[in-house]
Structures are given as C-alpha cells and as structure tokens.
Image (cartoon, rainbow, N blue to C red; front, side):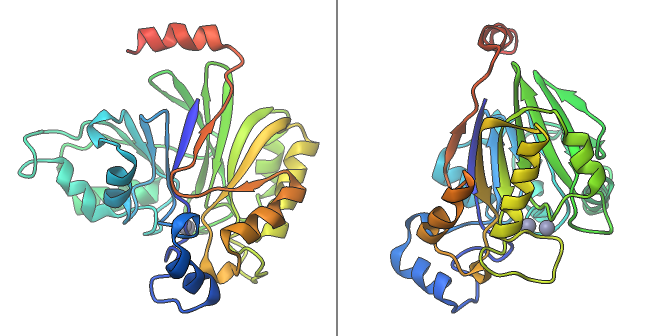
Length: 284
Ligand SMILES: [Zn+2]
Ligand SMILES: [Zn+2]
C-alpha cells in the first residue's frame, strides 16, 4: 500500500498565510520541505483523503487526476479539510459528467454541509461513523474516534488492503480511552500522525505537540496497536509550533518518528503480497 502526503500543513499552512513568525520567515527564504500546504493525502493514487483549499495546487504539483480516484473520504468538517465550493467543478456545466465520479464517505457534519450546498445534486454521500468499518473496492476502512472537533464525530482512518494496515491520524488530539482500547492488538504497519503544535504546548486539547504525539505513539506500541517495525510520519504542522523541518527531524528521531513533507510517498509492506496481486488484477 502506498500513501502519498499531498499536504502537511495545519489550517493556515507554512509559511502561515499572514504569519511573520520565525518558521514562516524561514520557509519563505528556504522553500523546499519547509513549505507546507493544507493537510491531505491519497492512498494508492485512488482513495483521496480530505479535499481542502489547496487541492487544486496539490493535484497539479503531484500529477493526480481526480477522475482516477475511486472514493473521497473526509476526516471532519474544518475548512482546511473541506473546501465545499471546489466540489462544484466535478459536475455540469464545468464538465459533461452528470454525476459525481466517486462516492464521498464522511461523517454527518460533512455530509450535511455538502448536501445543503448542493441540494438535489447527483452526489453519492455515504454517512460513516467511528468504529464502524466499511468497504470500498479492495479496501476495508475503519474510522476511529479522534479527540478534535467536539461537536462532530471527528475521524481518523485505518486502511486495510492485502494484509497491510495503515492509520491516517489527523486531526487527532490525545485519543479518548475507548479509542486506545479499540486499537489494542491491531498491529498496524504504519501511521501518519499530526504533530500540529510542535514545540509549543498549548491548552487546546484538539491537537498534539511533539511530546504528546510521542506519548501517543509509545502507548500504541506498548499495546501492540502498532508493530515495532511500523513507520510513523508526522503531518499537519503549524508555524506556531516553532519547528522547521530540520528541527522536527532532530526532535522526532529519538522517538522513532520522522516528519512528513508535501509529496512524501510512504510504502507500507503488504504481508500478503500474493493476495494483493490477485486483487489488483480483479480491480484493474
Ligand atoms: Zn486541520
Ligand atoms: Zn481540524
């Protein structure tokens, strides 16, 4: 299974939209991995995760065509993850398509926003909720409950295919006990985890700083939720966190983690590679 990070920035990106903080200024001068667009990812170039305001830029930069996608899945309704106005370009009169080319899987809050913006439009909305698995194509997907936007079921997402298990975890906060309990023994092969607040310990519980992200990962390893060999990559970094990419590398390495960057492609080994090849043929 391949996961590409298309964006790894928090709500206002890096350089922060209107920010003049040291991390934003560093990113303006140096570019490269220090520039982060709003968080989004894609699994096997086919399952799109979130559809934020930088989607247009990201698909051009990394060579993706939304018509090649098979599903769009949302984590939650914050506007750095859901740019509802951009969905209109999938349909007539912008293109000749008379229905959305793929289903949208999302919690009630996201589905309600899309449905009220596009009443009666031919969009297949599938309502999903935490701890209730569903399937799309060869993937089994299990949403889990994050500790983030309190007035909705904020979701992190486990993807399973060919025996490989991968967790996409943003926006996360410190998981509630029922989520830690649910994850025990999952033996995940890899995960992407937010470390929004970097070196900055804020009172807001809906995001993680580096220290809390490391604690969360440690607990997942201790309960066999995460395999010892599983790679852990961070995302959703805010300039306010006070860490450049190089500083994130240095701070995360002792915890067996590394910072993501826009465009990073992560390969997750599939234990049942032969099964995967068979199912590839089936779904070609
Ligand atoms: Zn966010
Ligand atoms: Zn959010």
